[in-house]
Amino acid sequence: MEEQLKELLASIQNAEAELRARGKDNTDQTAALKKEIEELRNAIEDVTVKLNRPGGLQSAANDPDVEKRAAAFVQFARVGDIAELRTLSGATDEEGAVFLPADMSKEIKTKAYTLNEIRTLCSVGKTGRNRVYLPSLSRPKTGYGNVTPTEEELHAGAQTLDVHTAKSLVVIPNDSLSDSAYDLVSKLIDLFSESLAEEEGRAFAIGTGTGEPMGVVSVETKANAVTSAEVGQLGATHADAIALIKKAFYKLRKQYRRRAVMLCNSQTEAFLDSLRDADGRKLLTTQGEISYFDGIRIVTAEDLDDIATGKFPIVIGDLKHFEVYDREGMAVKRLTGGNYDTSDTAGFLLKARHAAGVTMPEAFVPVKIK
Picture 1 (cartoon, rainbow, N blue to C red):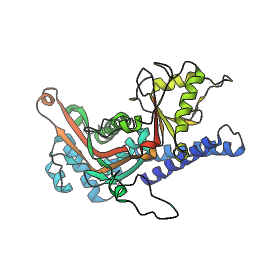
Picture 2: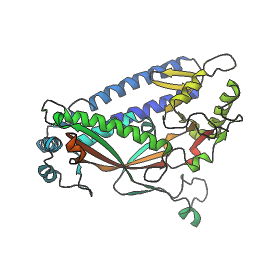
Picture 3: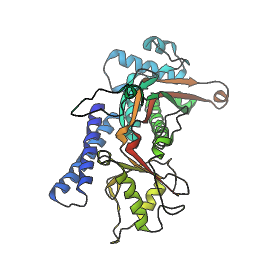
């Protein structure tokens, strides 16, 4: 079902790209595309509901071994009995945390996947190592003649993405842990997936690369930026602001424009909603829960800059060239003692590992405020 979700997301991206390519065309084909997009969104919602149904960990599988592993995890979470769980899983991480049951880990990832809008549009893969080695050529070398790489091309431009650990802490009262009717597993899944999606979204947008992924707004992508003519604003007039955004969009090669989206925070989106073209037409529109500015899909990244002097409030680019590699094995540690005992609570520290970063800087053009 997770693969079905990915296929639906890919289909909706292709349909949206074709709709943007048609521009203001109001033909029957355009109407059909809009209907197809709405049907795809409904299908995605149906699949997501099934994947995230309450009690998914305990009811998802009929395999006795899987059910036993799930029951052992619940016992560990409620009372800290770790011996059986370690025996069943056969592994703990380097800090003594236990690896989550596969179903629970998958459910957290799936729900976080749908909540992090950037992740739904970028390239996602898996890795079993602490570093991902990318191809030495940023894109295939293609031609009708000799395509043998030079010595420099074999070595220059080689890129690596380091795996970083995102941590999420949940504190739950012991009264809830001892309540057999309290759906502890569903609560942990909801809390971990939401917080993980939020932190991933921040890192994928503005991460520094130190102890976390390097985000879309990086030194390399900033080199492609277009800058406003007016200090502290996108433009002196609506026409100037619109022209600046179009300048950024058309600075991208056509191969990137086809899938290009606009990343900005809600404050910037509110400003875009106020812009009108020469005919007084509003350029920001919505379809379902997705906004578009002059046909370009808006991806909400709340951690991007507000519109202010020297800031980068908007990035336009193809998120296919922001790659994410998840490392298998989410681990959770049960925290007790000290302040947890005095407050009659227990902490649960989740660790999820992934590498992420821009792999084609030319596919992104930030907008800089003068």
